[in-house]
Length: 274
Image (cartoon, rainbow, N blue to C red):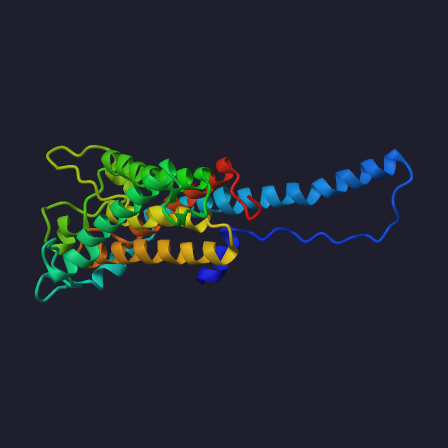
């Protein structure tokens, strides 16, 4: 799925309205019929927006979770990142290493600066010669995405108990077998409960999904989507290479971010006309 396609899906373009070329109506009944006909495209647009912003990501989310229960594609992918000869992951997880600083520490720092800047703009939209092009509701919307998406992921992580790849027997971990999400939720005696599902680190990058709805122009929304996908995917891929998450963990976080951002966009009535 290309970025342009995904942009079209989450921000469906308004339907074009063509004039019918009829003379001015002579009766009130004709005027009423025309007024009713004008509301149909609007309703269709609203329903289409709800589908792409909420129904579609929710359906994909359920599909990915269900597929993970039956198909071990997580292990197939993770095997590519683990060297059986050296018993090491492609990247050694170390926050103080060059890769750790680049893909773990610095992104969190930049996200914090971005959130703080939005908060200041929400309080005061004009700073000297700079005036924020977004109104206050759009700024609040992006801030809510930055707060709610990682919070939802953190809640799920705390209650699912999924072990990280580096902690299971298959990868010389701590004596824990591989278990799917539903297999991990029940407590297993004598085993430590981990917080591997969904991907928490990637949730910070995917929390930028609000940028796919907040900009006023279609090109701005496309750029916002690209930023969110790039940030979340880079952060999630780093964790996979280091043995901290499976592929499905990152995909689920992406779909959760899409769902939350989409529902908030519907709630805030964000569209190209406001």
